[in-house]
Image: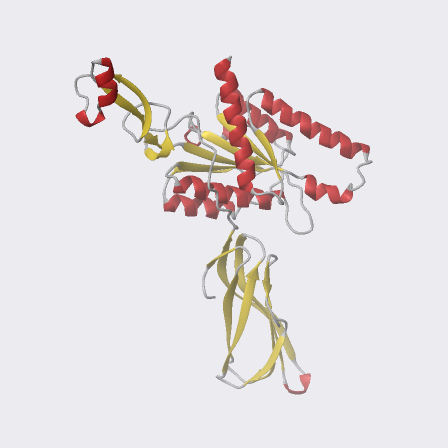
Length: 367
């Protein structure tokens, strides 16, 4: 193949080299592609003749319709002798790895964490210290630098005053991906949307020099401790493309997640369709433990609405009312919940979460 990595929805070239040790009167070959990868153009069964030592090269153009980790190179082979008296069939597996990374949306703004870490970053901290963003003025103290003196305030008050600033710090962000259950349509499902959103958020936070970690909370528990840098970006994307629905009936709680994966001051962004009670309870448990939590509800409604288009189904109406009550339950404990569907931009959902958190801070201060 031309490369071993590509973006979801892109194309890649592949070549199949065939060589015969002996004479082959009739050779039939067909490249068997995994689900999610298709061939562009005529890529069905190909038949030709090969003499002893002769080789032939077949070219393909492959399109990846879905993110994931694939193996390309399984070939169905059928060889027939002259007049078709004898035939041999089999498969040749010369598999090559192919990783298709999910599509990413460029996010101009992200949700800011309430608490920051001592590491240098691009988020303005609420603490006061060395920085660019103006915070306040205070009387001059021994050891203060002269360049921080506010001469106008000092002349007005006839006493030396210096400027205080908010330092630029990094924050810890944990992407909490729910893989217990999903709603799926003919094309993709809620897990596909959640993986794309997690990839976009990871890129946006890492570009702002934050530490980003990942928790895949489901039948198979996976995690990545928060780190920063380009290497962490590839780790997160590689972990995301291996995310699949794993059904389990065990009662999984957040206590199984190592403490180093969930720093106390971390911002936890949950990407979940809110379909499994274990995830619902785990998120409430995180909030009760004092974590800064925001929930992006990857809406399963568009995938279920096709079967309940009339709206007269009593079960359908009860289910939608239960989801609304669940949103209010999270909001009562101070957790912003925004419903995000495929026909809506992720940036709009992030803006709604930010507006809710700003409103909650104003209300808590006024109280």
